[in-house]
Length: 262
Image (tube, rainbow, N blue to C red; front, side, top):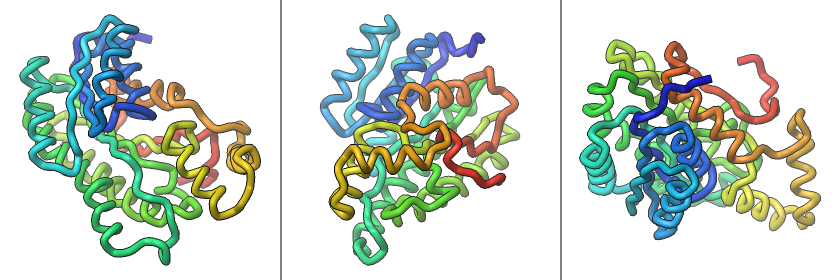
């Protein structure tokens, strides 16, 4: 299937590793012009890797998605380099693991700033440019924790629901601008973030790493943890013109782990 992405401009945040990196790579493979940002200096290495593999120009930018000035700079630089913006993928590192008793109020505030307000900032400054695109799309990366709370993740379980509310509302408000807004909900996908979560579980349970991975895998009907590439394939399709009548969808990529019908 032709995803009709050749020459389109896609911006993916928090893309130095994990799901963001895999998504950026897949956009590049489909011929899109790709801009990526992250706080880490490794963002430049990631851009070079993707460009070398795909032969596609990749713009790398050091930026903190909790900073309004950084977000404005990232959007403006992307548009200046590529002449516009067609696709925005909002992504940010997940908030810390922990129970309600573990988490202090300051951490709640910083996590809201990271997980919710980063998406708000990105959409706010990207909108004028997306409105000029013929195939505009916004994709928020959230989590299956918005459908079914995950043990020891009170911050993610709570705050990502607000991103879902934002996404669904924007899908209605921006429909008249022909801007599609969807969210993709990854389940257990083996990234550096999941490695951290598994280690946090090990610290509480005293289990071995193999036992904890087996425990997680047993909750997935397909019997395993997913790969970033499997996630990226779905994310890129959902953002592409090939999915032109898909709007306001919260799509789980979790191997069937969420069993509810809604």
